[in-house]
Each structure stands twice: as structure tokens, then as C-alpha cells.
Image 1 (cartoon, rainbow, N blue to C red):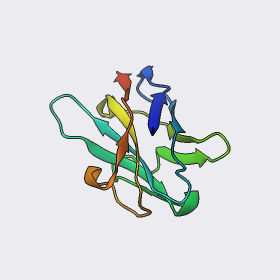
Image 2: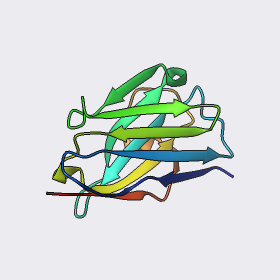
Image 3: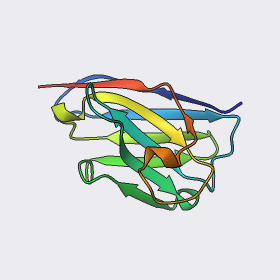
Length: 124
């Protein structure tokens, strides 16, 4: 059974940093795309970052470029999202997702497995 468990969320002041972790079990994600998504109240879930090609390639949504970094540690079966220079508008529930494919995409429909999410709140 595939399980993705996010952690690392919390409350932080604007300009601060958080590192989210996604522990993966029951699935070998190396060679497949892994993504981070977020959903703010009243808004649709949106893609934040994706890592693919065995962790060699990454892609970011414009609104996080230069501030967030996605990475993976295959030995620990964990995917990370380092979030720096956080803004109030980054406040959302953050989700980790895994795909059975290997691609550059931030479309939610391309991802097959999802975690339960971790809340990130950025205060002014």
C-alpha cells in the first residue's frame, strides 16, 4: 500500500523558512515524478514544484521560483520542499504527490498518489 506522509508544516512569520518532508512507503518513486501542491481556502489545488528524471530535473511554478527548492533523498525515501522568503500568500495546505510516470507537469490529474497534507501558515 502506497503511503505518503507530509510533515514540517507550521506557522512562521513572513520572510521566514520552513522545510516540508514527504515520507514515502510502499512505492519506489525513483524514476517517477514527485510533486508538491498546495490548496488555500476557497481556491483550487495548484502545483508548486515537481522533481523527475530520477531527481535530476526540477520545475517550479512561477510564484515560487527562486524561493522554494524541491529535492529527494532516495536512501530515506523522502522528498523535501525547502521554502524560503515565505509570503503571507503562501499560506495553504501543502500536499505531496507521486506519479507512476516520469514527466514535467504540475497538473494534479497526472499524479496518482497523495498524502493528507500539512498546514503552512505565514503571518505578517
